[in-house]
Length: 317
Image (tube, helix red, strand yellow):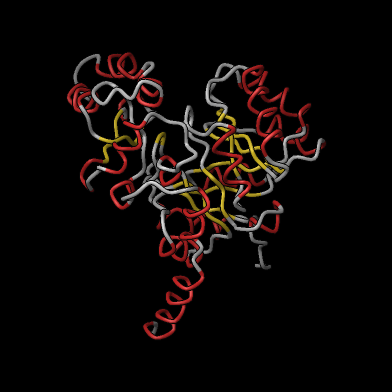
């Protein structure tokens, strides 16, 4: 296999780092801060209509001249209009999730966009590789929000071996050690979401940040498996109710009903009981709020990464 470029080389950024596109969390302010600090800041389209997303794009262009991305959730009812709008806006990077972007890829790339796709299986990775995307984001089940079944440790090397594209590792990455681990698995970049929730520049409710900072290792739960769209969240009253309903008669419908508006209740209202506090398993390892620049500095700390390399040299047989 020929050497795959670092994602930073492909996208024209300093660090091989993509900020995760978290619905209701990843707005233009946070994304601009990440781009200014050398990563790829990403606006999450979520269920935004095209006009609302265009306003976010206008805002980020007023905050930074650096490359940025937009994450498109293809399950959204607004996905067709959003996808058409993005071609006209000539967004530097478009990242897709929860679906197959094949019908949009050519139009986006003709307007100069790099296209990346989030995948959770080798089968989907092979299919999207042939659709013309520029890179893949292999997201393990340690990640927050909607997840697949395979862990990052199992998923990343499998996708690296399955496709001739740069692969970005996501899920459970929160410090220099986990960054190094991702590269050991063959990744050419990393995507980080949960750690940026507690960034000073992140505009979520303070209760959301505190939920991450106070999380224990046993607080990460997966709800909604019965619905076919499992979601990793931090345990609270809502989550306990969902888990009780999971396999009861009619449980799938009740879980969908309980989940409606729950993310907004967490992000905007800070409702610690009935909000859906989406976060990855690494939340319990995050113990302080920091600036985006300091977070990225720790993820790619030269001294820490150098020590990891030396330890590998000593310890490998």
